[in-house]
Image 1 (cartoon, rainbow, N blue to C red):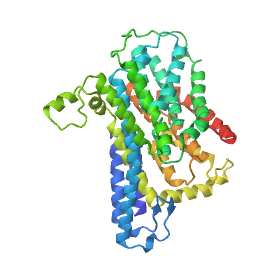
Image 2 (cartoon, one colour):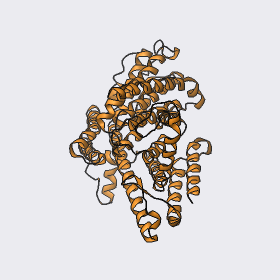
Image 3 (cartoon, one colour):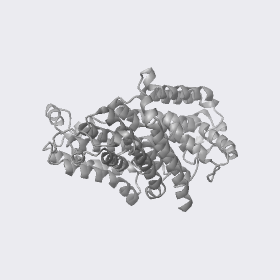
Image 4 (tube, rainbow, N blue to C red):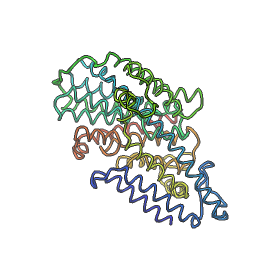
Length: 463
């Protein structure tokens, strides 16, 4: 039965990676393999020789001695435990996405666009790279990429030049997301899972992530596409809403407040995100002169109000397919963890990888394993890779292994355009060709990844 569940996961994983070839959205195989995996566990619960206790993070010794009813009850408790941990991540992402959409409702990002008053291609490259690096740390790398490419489309007329900027934005956004607990889904998973803390994440990863952005940008600034001056689109230079700047800074400030709230209250991050969303929503409703109809009973008056409510408008625009994908993939990985499969795989890695002459972490995990995880995240999705690592390794909070995983998984995806959510969305927005990116941008991303990894190895020896 274990073999069948592994095969379900492998085929589901394959369908996710071949999303563009088979023309099936990746959320579908993710949800199917989640449901099938847990269904097989339920049907064959008596056939499994071991069970992984997620609370104690160790294999149970007496699982085979339990009765059928006890095993079923334990499975239900484990499923509920994993659903709760997954829901924390999903609710957190829903809140962050809604705040960003509220900012966009008031055209808050036009404030950034209006700051561009020069024509130098090199200056524009550095401006967008720095913005991507900083914004992705606040509003996550996926959203930062969408925002900046939308602004880029309004500024740069020539698409052949614009896709070069988009490529560097992908690298910078993924680098910026790695050092912030709210900058990338994988880093958020590690943060919510109590594997990394905000302070240590910054200390360990800011310099490596910065170099991962700066080195490719510096090298690219000498390339032909970034020499000379640009023909700028002369669009409206005034924000469409008088509250655009206010909502931009209010929204970004509310998201930044979330880690502070967690440190003060020790509550899960999604609680702080809901508080931030509530505060931003209050100002959004006041500024739009709309009635408070967030939880009103469905009626004709409510429906009319909802059409003008920035909150309802923003909720209708969030990326629900991405949320469902994360649900499917995280719960599917949880199925493998519960059967102790990931734990066994981790032991195998610990036994084989130390034979390679690379530095080892406290449990014998080689740096090479983590670097391969980064390369792997360029080929397949980094979310299940990090989810698997959570079930494989048992290090404590702020162990350097978790920070290296955060860096590798967060930045490694830049090496291929399909390797990160930022790359996939940029590919869709600008119709960037896979092989064009591989030829023109991938080597820059690889250069940044290697320099950043080397910098991490230096910083961890210092701290």
